[in-house]
Length: 340
Ligand code: PBG
Image 1 (spheres, rainbow, N blue to C red):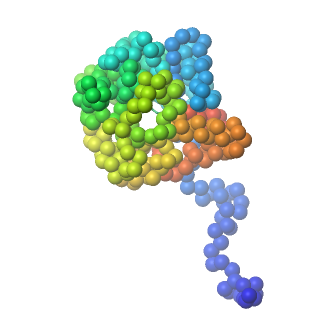
Image 2: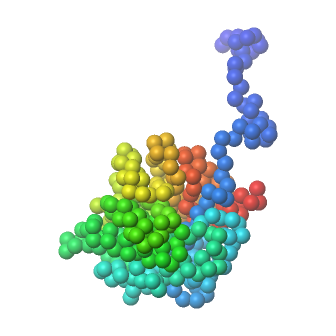
Image 3: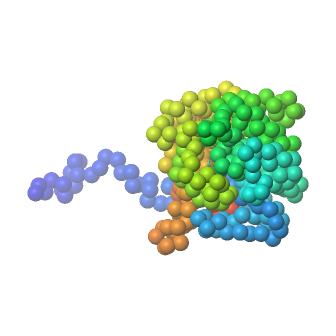
């Protein structure tokens, strides 16, 4: 072995020491490129009928289905923490489900009532509604089906328009179509304009993949049983594709989307980066139910340190280019961030 390395001559030390800037907290802070703040968080939550109901979701420990009175309690927490927005997902009673999903645009439906309650009590908190038929169909698909069980595009779009209009009428600030039908953004945009809801924003689930990470969500809203062995491959995107995501997003922007979303989150951050680089529009990412379940389960087992991994996962989404993140951890994360 040569003694050359230990002599202290000009070849013996690194020209650049990356670790210098990492040595102290002050210089780490100064060169920090990205930051996660409470302004980045959207809280998705499940609402159900009844009073005083906080029903735990088995596959998502810490997440509950909330009756509207309980929703207001948690929404107050969100408002106090200054979480910018809440995304609502109704749990529809079986008897309200049908083949034509008509409950979806019932002005007295659960989602519509939840919107009104939230806007009445917390007008400063943005309310986002999910536009898709799966909580309302007896078969658990996001759209209307023909005799072959195929989800038909244009009739579904007509139904989604009715649903989106009823959400806007109830006072939703943002409607978020998560159904992946073709042309629905344009149709909803046109109908909102015609109805005088020009300022209702559209957050398009533009690149929504046919992911196995949605399992716990389908338990939570009770569509898993209805869907059975069915899948959503004929409308949600193939996880193998990324150019197709850019194509989808280009179309939704052309049709009038104000914001676009990529979903799921952590396994799809390459898509977030490509979308942000290409379009430079408000870009959101959904840390979905399966991601929550993984982080929670590992934390509960003591295998991961919950606060640290959750905040790291959310920061990674910002670094990938997301302007905001839907996460079931939103309220916890807001509290952790506030505590510093
Ligand atoms: C339904 C919808 C789904 C999610 C949001 N809206 C499930 C699905 O497409 O089957 C998933 C959210 C999550 O997993 O957290 N249109």
